[in-house]
Amino acid sequence: MSLPAGFQHVDHVAFTVPDLGEAVAFFVNALGAEELYRSTRGPDAHFMPAHFEVPTDARLELAMLRMPPNLNVELFQWWSTDQRRDYPRHCDPGGHHLCFTVADVDTAVEHLRSHGARVLGGTKEVGPDSPLVAGNRWTYLRAPWGLLIELVDRSRVHNPPPLVGPADWTDPSRTGKDL
Image (spheres, helix red, strand yellow):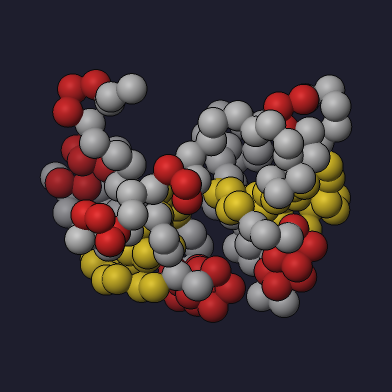
């Protein structure tokens, strides 16, 4: 299936964080990301409200990270006089999480715990009520600043749905391009 109107692929996901240095360190040290660049913008009373729907005094610093092999993550730290500090809950509009496929949930949980993440309720396994993903082991964690992270181990799923993964990625030796 092709994407509409010339869309090609997802370029990146972005999250606003309370402390850019802390968040970059977590992504680099705990998740193996590479920092690609940093940038700043604002305050600019005309540009910022028009292009970001933020107050006239808002300014930002961002870091673009590369999560091998297939994801770019942009982290923003914003400053503004009327900035809200509460995060949407998972069940609130605007709620979100970042999910990683892992080889073993328990090992990945312990690794992220050692970097300050907090586990929510322990590891679960999907049962026969969801036959296409039965055996899937998963858990949610909170990064030190609050980002919800899901870990999923699909190695026990016998007949998984057609989820995108390494088997679907182009072999760089055939195309001459890096993943």
